[in-house]
Amino acid sequence: MAKKDYAKIAADIISACGGESNIVNVSHCMTRLRLQLRDGSKLNKDSAKSIEGVLNLIEQNGEYQFVIGQDVPSLYEVFQNKTDIKASGEIQDDAALKADASAQKGNIVNAILSFIGGTFSPVIPVLVAGGLTGAVLALLTTFAGISTESGTYIVLSAINQAAFYSLPVFVGFSAATRLKSNGYLGAFLGAILLFSSINGAEGLDFLGIPITTVAYNSTVFPVILGCLFMSVVYKFLQRHMPVFLRTIVVPLLTMLITVPVTLIVLGPIGGWVGSALASAVYAIYQAAPMVAVAIIGLGTPWLVFFGMNNAMYPIVFALLAEVGSDPLICAGMAPANVAVGGACLAVALIAKDVNDRSVSFGAGLTALCGITEPGVYGVLFTKRYPLIGAMIGGGIAGFIGGLFGMTQYVISTPGFISFAAYINPDGTMGNLVISMVVMVIALVLSFLATYVLGKKALAK
Image (cartoon, helix red, strand yellow):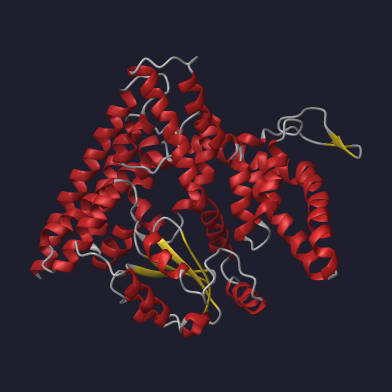
């Protein structure tokens, strides 16, 4: 594969966006470069999509996302060196704020899913690191004889437990930042909910008003609802408070108003929503596990295409809190992701164009590790027949996974590289074997289906 010229890609993106002066800020996630523009009408979408190194361009609520691949941090570094472009996730330009707010007036469902997905996307590295550390612990205690009383176990366990216990802090920061509020106050709200005298406290009241007991360390909905309310309060105070009082008074009043409302009203609602969601989803799974996992298996490429895959994380957290593992979402996404890899590798084998072969091969290997955006945007939805092949492989393998009760015990990027996530904490290997077999089936079926469909398509 030819080495990418990131300076040229950045220059082409800037040109397609109407110049540096039109770019308010730039950030990135795992595979996408995310830009906010002062004037979206200046963006030449056709030119942007044709840039070599850009797999696709997606617009979501005023944000323009250039799909690059896992090497997007290298491209982001070029933008960091541009003195006229702000390399941060927060917009401070009043005109830009108004333009972004105007762009967000649209489909309410899309806005909600975009908000949830955008909130969890930056938190994924923490979840993967923390989750897989738990799987590493299972391996060490089972095969390396590491004692649960040893310092090694205690340190690694802290990494695992801290990631999920402190999740409201990370989500609070990310949600508040996404809402263009103060991210640190969002993190502060999460820390307050986790404080020992608040988290799971019984018999607590505020000014005589009883506070419902909620285990805030096992749910993310309370802090999300709290940040939504906090952003309204914060922005209202910022607009109406005299400038010389903002630094001191705005943070104080924001928290004095937000915390009681969250504890008395929003926290219990969020806790109930999380529990109800987990119960409802698990009930669907129990009623028809094969069908439920198969639907996730064949539908995941579409979730990725529409940017809805990260919006599934609240369901995953709810399932982990309710039943101790995720037998549906991640269990279905694992064969789906591998199936995307199989479809891309088949395209790499039969494609006649050298560039198509290169892109497909790289996207295929990436998808086998669980990152499917390059494959979905660069291969599946541009050629269509690999999309069908991936859906066939993911759907059938998902059905088999549901039949044998495949599940995922910790948060990770579903795919071969996260094999440790399928090891039962009790040390037994049955689920790992089932998971590996299911993913191999997905890989083989998607490869064969895509190969056959591709041969027919290319023969026309």
